Amino acid sequence: MKKITSRVLILLLVLSATNAAFSQKNKSTNSKKHSTMNKKQQVTALLKAIETGATEPVATINANKYIQHNLNVEDGLAGFGKLLQQLPPKSARVNTVRVFQDGNFVFAHTEYNFFGPKIGFDIFRFEDGKIVEHWDNLQTTAEPNPSKHTMTDGTTQTVDLDKTEANKTLVKSFVDDILVNGRMEKLAGYFNGDSYIQHNPLIPDQLSGLGKALEAMAKQGITMKYDKIHTVLGEGNFVLVVSEGHLGGRHSSFYDLFRVENGKIAEHWDTIEEIPAKEGWKNNNGKFGFTY
Image 1: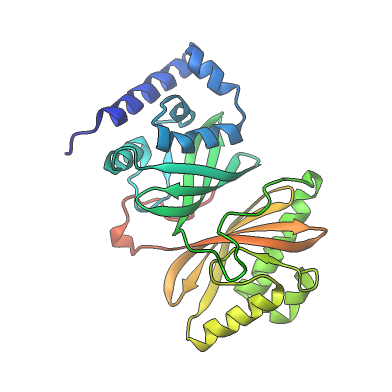
Image 2: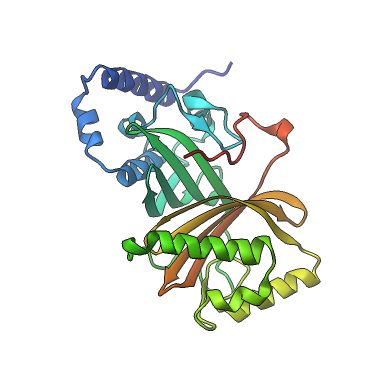
């Protein structure tokens, strides 16, 4: 076994000590300070710790129950530590652009430089105040799309908290109707005319731009098929849909973030990640497996 770097070893020791103290109701000053943060702040701090090496945020993880769904990472806290060990020193950069909460789930939209520049969606499940499960979807950062939008720019403000469930229902219906079942006759009903802001690297703004891009893909023989919706999470005007399907014949995971405005879809961000063959998985938890 490779020798674990001192930074990772310290991180593991601090986490172990913090969890023991928590169970005994004898928290340190840092633990008390961290526990006053809400779940969204805790997730943001945990992700930033990948860059800074800070140990306190890692206390948010329940070391005894942590389930990992990134199939390129070994399960549990040891897998997380092993991944950090492989990073070149001071190479990581983390900028969380958006973070939302839906019950015990927190989901974040983040710019990474982590073994190269990437855009990621991370989902964390909390139980008894600690993170016990993690999913993500990563895509190599692309150049701005034909409408000059990047994969993360645009509004970050959360509004319409009272409309969360209605917006989740709307977006789930859109994905089910259009992307899963191909009911294209319903497409226009989900949008306010041609008004639509797009952050996918290959597709321009406007509903007509989406139609032209899909037509161009079809002419090139590039197929995109959503087979199943696994979960829908939302806060106010933002809704994240996690789906499974195929892009160009390759088994893929689709994370689509939508912004809803006045009952219509107004903006879209996404990441698409190929799912590795099962023999290449480093844990047996699967890419999805959401629990409630």
